[in-house]
Image (cartoon, rainbow, N blue to C red):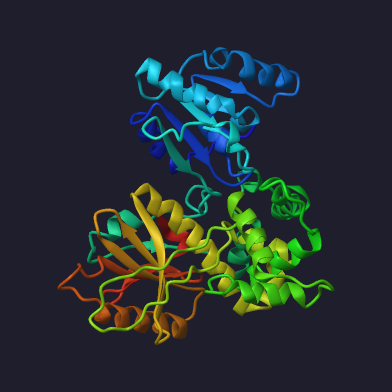
Length: 424
């Protein structure tokens, strides 16, 4: 058995158990939800254990409270197999009047809510898990802390030894726990298997509607090509339609995309709306992202060498990798990751916004001094647009790079941080 790798979400989970009676852990298939929950569970009920599945379902119908007995926190894995467990858990939390009683995990396939009568408000709290960041997988030194950057240090230090080949591999392998530490070929196959499972079954189970697998493939390929873009559904429809004999409506495309969102394959990024000195209109459309860059490479049918031969595509998918990591890091700080773009074309790849109102601006560049300078100019232009009479200025401005030996602070105050140095 593999040794458990500590996750940033471990501490968040402990905090949530101290605040509510039950914690529901959500996230994509294979991201490690059950394994993480088992690290703190006092007892475990696996609803889908083959030898006990039928009995468990029957018991959930007749006497669900029996399934809830055990040392706390009691982990109920794949609870959605018996939806009535939700109300039973809520009732048990009320009866006991104590926090930290239950952990619920489920596959990425959503539960049938028809048998649930209570939202769980006040009893449940939700926890989102994603594939592993580079710091969690041991592939970032963590010499530069996102949290520390909010204090605007005069100096940062960090060393990264990643080559372009290394970054290409990390993009294609992704952050799937099963892949970490494997040899290259089996490691890369994990994302391919994940993609196949989505196309062949998981997307249909999201809403119990059978979908054309070829259309799913074409949609996922189009989504991969448009990572980091604010792309309308019409674009995806046209890409699918180009090789489809039947007509296709935007509503159909929307239903496919919503199904992918429900199983956490897609995690689009909302727009950031600051107070500006000018009346420039801000584009509020979501930015398109997979939850992990390896899904994009699997959808495109490409590997590390293909990325190296197409640096434009590699740059887009490197952005997806960085967004994944920033989301993991920001969530541990109580923050979210947003995107800025206005009608003039000025944009900022990511805005890390904390609940206390502080925020940092970060551009993402694969590497190269020219791209770094372009990113720095964008950051400074956006900083000047922000109305600091109505909101604080940015706590920091940063350019995250893939290829770069050192982390440092420029004379203009902008931090240059290789992704292989960053942590929460």
